[in-house]
Length: 289
Image (cartoon, rainbow, N blue to C red):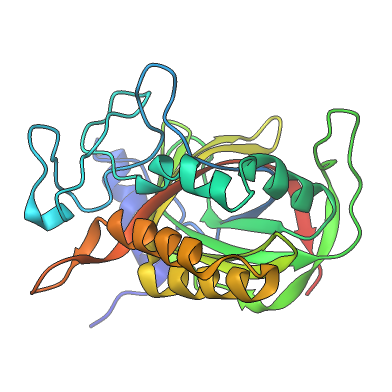
């Protein structure tokens, strides 16, 4: 015979009277905390001390010697001290200069402030902002007019419409521990405008660590993810067509991008994905469904 929810609750209360764990009413659905990223900063260079912002995405540590599993690319140490960090995007500063995109951070932040790149994070089923073993995380893109403050960042409390085609699946592999949201299996695709060309930049099968602040209603941290080399080839081709760049130079840049791939090794040789990372800072927002 199955016991009803109320029966289980009464049973728990009786157990509490006998000195066992106290009775607690079952939790209902948690809240959904919604943020828009007021700061988006791709990590395209190492820090001055040689550390690299990012995460260990493949679960391997090639600090001692590069290995075939990482296509013989080096791993790094993060500013927080994590070893085995994968972020080959951080080695592409020189290649980006060739493309005339030596200030990717400035370009991307301008898109945010102009309302062209509104990355929204929804933390769902949230019962406790400090410690919650089971939450969800969903990224999506929004659209609409924006207000920017004197600090050149988006003003909190704005409302946006969903951007069709850029609504990504939520991950349930997420938890909050000591005020930090940890999530796995996170994927986003960001529309970036560079050299007058609109490009989709995918970051797949990623990892996220974001600090939650309930009082300020902010979120701050980092995402790392894998960029398919096939997508990078398409980006280079689009830029080549739009800018009229020299074909030899374009082929050189394409070879450089393929050469930094370090994830998803193929059976023969080479890797199909490149590791990447970006820093994020979000403020409270609303999505108009």
